[in-house]
Image 1 (spheres, rainbow, N blue to C red):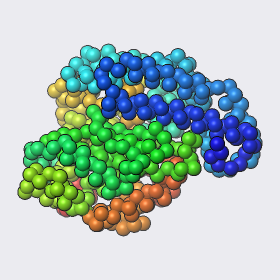
Image 2: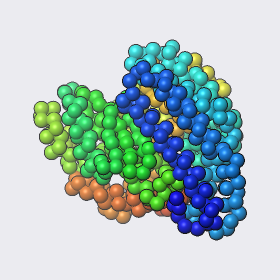
Image 3: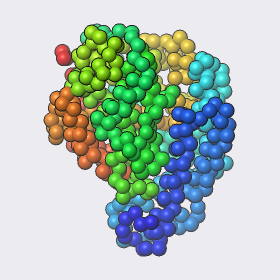
Image 4: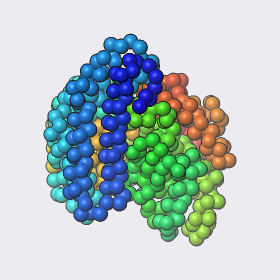
Length: 500
């Protein structure tokens, strides 16, 4: 298969085939992971762990093949590659350089431990079984530390894990950003909470109707249901086994539809990005975002800069009344918007308001850095988590289920992922400011159901570039702004402190 033209034909064709095989293996593993979260029976957990371990080992073996290194070296010397091809080779070389430092046996053990830990986590969280959770997460953390030490490349082990999700990111660079952001956020919490409207009254919002609305909302913002699936899971997530197959999940709280609607817009933002990647990059190293910070910017753009505004709720009100005729009695678009923007420190990260959310992330960044640096043991993680929640948010979790056990990331081995949420918030605010300069007031456009204007902006400025540019360069070109916290803070002040 020739994805693009250029390069010595035989060498390039071998490279393209190798890259496509790697893509297919990753897609197959992603599909097994999707099924594990949405449909696998409980007794299939051990077999699924073995399957995912085998696929991870095969993917690693394919990635580190010696002749693949020869291919990359030959293509690097060729001098005839176009810009896209150079980017493909650079990404492949980056992934291979990381992989060759990690033994295949470690890759397999980690994949198996992750799969077992996720399955255990789902049950342990339900039963508030902290001891079982710690026992399952301990080997995952230990194996991730081994990976970090093997990969190296930074001033501390955590840097290697950050670099997996946000290439080039370093803990020493992120730490002052989190410190500055935390110092600016904490004084906003009390006045924003005081200015908040009431929460929704506790009523019944049927799960089936919520899922029907989820599909309607996703379609409205541009999700192509002929190239995707929406389902339910314990923790919302998005994945793509390959071009033309983008899947996301939401979770349902039958007493609060805002939980699902927020998750739908967030995950739809990820899914729209995947569906917007150019077809010519399918099964190549460019068929992805350049980082998870870039990916999170898309989900947070839709969740916060569209879904929290009054215009969105004015557009959505007829559908809400149709789906929930009883629950909507006495409620209108303004009441729903006010409830969606309600600020109140929360124990649960995924349910946190936009003002306090990044305080949750600052805590996780601090704890992950300790876990990888050896200053925090997994056995001490629950107490450290509770202490941090009390320090940053004034809340102490009454149970581990709503404390340290709440997220899938640590059982899944996704250490280094959490900081990308904060980077996504910052980039999303800058994208929203640039979008309003380009297409007009997003709130007014949403009220008219003109979501295609915002989507077209993102398609042009972000999606079409796929992985051809590093994130900082991509976002700077897309927004005309360098990464910073000021646009995000301005957005918070205008949304939560100024009269509607």
